[in-house]
Length: 166
Image 1 (cartoon, rainbow, N blue to C red):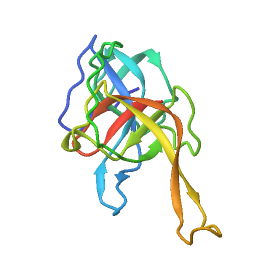
Image 2: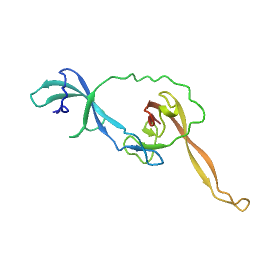
Image 3: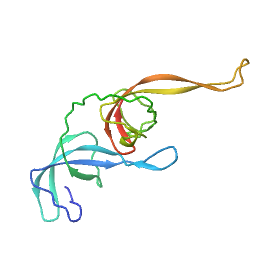
Image 4: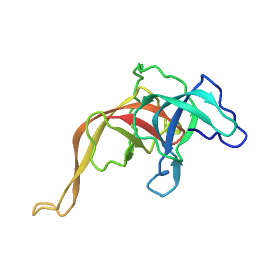
């Protein structure tokens, strides 16, 4: 059962995505740079009642809960054309789509860079972690050395944040 938002009408036969709004994405300075959404599935409106609509689940990716949001469903192509990746862009993985702590192949993640930083759908980036090398007897300086962990592909880019798949 679906309650439309105030002032909105659902259309019989149309498909809608059910989504959850996740916690806001923040950069290192603590500024909100985006609000990610997790698509839980797709429903088709099969019946309109006076106060609500009845939806049939067409696709389910994650559990639906009371309070999830609804928006018109626009089918996207699963094909992503590779785009040239500019040099010099460095950013951070802020969080996983499911609040993951560890990341692995085929997981969705959110980054702190977007269109304003020249990040675009289809670009590929290396994932790395800086290994901190403590001072030694020969040198009193702490240094860092990058460890290559894998690659990610940009799926969508907002103004200052983007989503990618590892």
